[in-house]
Amino acid sequence: MSGDAPARRDLLDNPWFIIGLLFLATGALGLPLLWRSRGFSSVFKVVIGVVVTIYTILLIALAAWAVMWAWGNVQDALEQSNH
Image 1 (cartoon, one colour):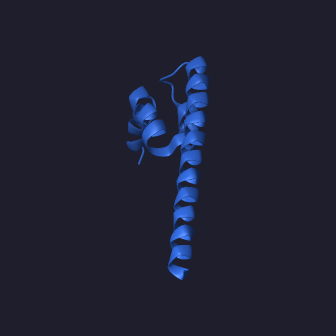
Image 2 (cartoon, helix red, strand yellow):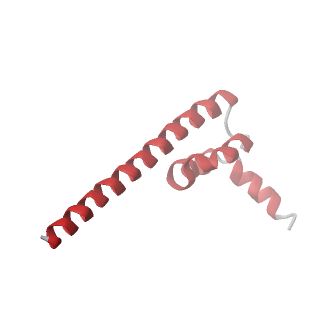
């Protein structure tokens, strides 16, 4: 088990892994990993943290819009089928 710790630390300190994790997989849920990483300066962590937070909010808003759009189409289809 102790052999896993250096491998995890290396992965956590890899800037490309953290950036990929933030933008492709976890969004804002990966921010704690960003702050634990030694691969970035504090200023860059703040900048990336803000960008990832905005990115995550936009993705959530897009998903909410898509659900509302789909629900409106379902309601229209149901109304048309009842007439």
